[in-house]
Amino acid sequence: MAESAGMPATKLKVGFSSNPRLKPLLDGAVTVEGVEFEWEFGNPGALFHRQLSENCFDMCEFSIADYLVTAHRPDWAHVQWLALPVFISKPLFLLRKFHVWKGAGIKSFADFGGKRLGVPDYGMTAAVWTRIMLRVLHGVHSKDITWYNGRPADKRHGHLLGIDHDVPGVKLINLERDTALNEMIHRGEVDIAFGDDATVPLREGPEVYVFSTPEVLRATLTDLYQQEKASPVNHTVIIKKHFVDADPDLPARLYRAFEESKRLSYEEARQAAEGYLLFPDQDFSRQARQLGDDPYPFGLDENRRTLELIGEQLAMDGLLPKKPDIDRLWLKV
Image (tube, rainbow, N blue to C red; front, side, top):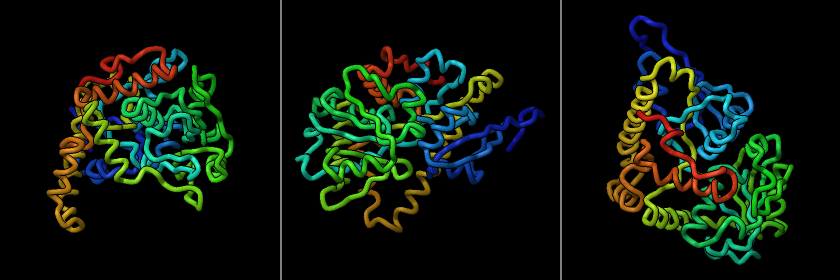
């Protein structure tokens, strides 16, 4: 990496999950002037838990919901995190894994009201998006569902944040074995659940099937985008404040680098698509019509409604004292 004006490069210890939109940054096709990265990769839930418990990364991919909660709690002011308007991940890998007990009678998301729903972590952004989609598209509210936290306390972000109990108006039950949620849905003690393979594994079986097929999820995301002009994103990028204080131009340089890395990854994907898709232009055009030209837009203005929906839901759930000021919490670049 280059050094700026003869000064030693700033070294940033960074933590991310595997992501093709970062590849140009990793292989050196994109650099950031005056910065050296010490990369660490891992499961996002585990990375976020480490950051919450150890504050070990100078910059990292991070849960939007967890960031909003910490930003509104005085006992977390010491971490001194700021967020870049970079949004590199969607919760689709989780939302496409809604497992349903056959006896629950689930035909659509509208049927979730009055049911027992298990998630890895009630406060995680994917669970927040579940509540947004149920409320906005189907009129099903958090209080209409009995919720189960599938992660045990030592892996649960909500336990570190103190939001895994006494949630106003909501029945929330904590499970303390990572296999408990899977066992309960197969016994019909939980109606619906999604998990993650790292901490809350779920399996299909004679009485349990995956409800959220690609067709179901695509239709739901399209309806949400058409109604709200928002598409679920679950992770942003946070950086420790003292690096920004020392180098005020750093956020802009980082933002440009993330944007360029994403652009190059899109180019590579389009070139590779012809080797796998018979009609790549049509497939890309279909996605653009349903969900916009850029599936992962960066920037505060481009994601304002998306972030407002997350903040509104967290406030409605009692996990935030009020709707957050998005402009105060994300850096201007």
